[in-house]
Image (cartoon, rainbow, N blue to C red; front, side, top):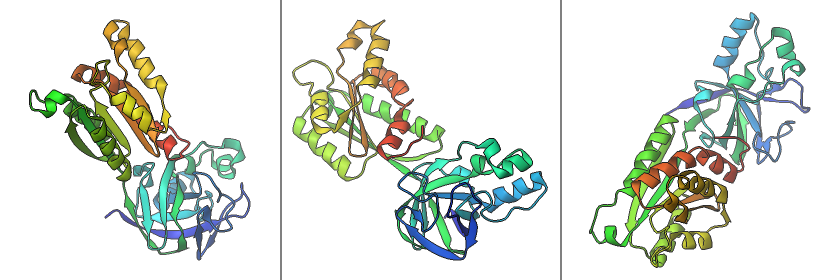
Length: 311
């Protein structure tokens, strides 16, 4: 169940000062009430495990008090560094979303660093933002819920949908994405859908994906210049913003050796908090495109979610 508990709640009324334990408090939409680090940003609440504090204390040969590393919440029973951005920390009365692991060490401006030449918070602390407000108190239990990425893969092909030949590019996308998320130890769910080159059906599926809060939508097929190739046109009309650089770079990279690659009208775009990628219909092209897309895929999603971090 990934359960853990709060062993201390700590606040400071000024930044740059040690936080002081309190028995209970209020989680507002900006962080813990009266804490200097609360605000309209992605690092509203900081968390550090007592296991990390104890380990660091043994190395530094001294004991550390709760809040001395400027953590808002001191936990027991969870390896915070195993969490990841967009994971959920759910408590009885409030909910946090993990937004960042670690931070830049302030070095000489940190009292603990000046004393022992090191600090644990930049390496093993994490940060979160408030999704649901409520009361917080010492002894409260929490549950870590890893983020499950919701992905839709849509193949557009008249002939494949009629059974003339097997859809290979959709499964190729799924295989590549599974490898990507498993390598990063992230959870995912992928739905594959096969339709003809039909604008109305594509728009319906795009809307359904957005309604289900899909994180990523991948389409394959329909990016050429034939009469039935409508995928990029539909997606650009449907989306909020285009991300032209990714696909332009891919076309140029592979077009140097294969001039026909420059004819692809593949696009990348966003709708609300969903990233959309329209890929060509061949398995070879799908694999080439995904190599480049996956370099920025999580960073794009983090930006859409308002997180100032890199994937």
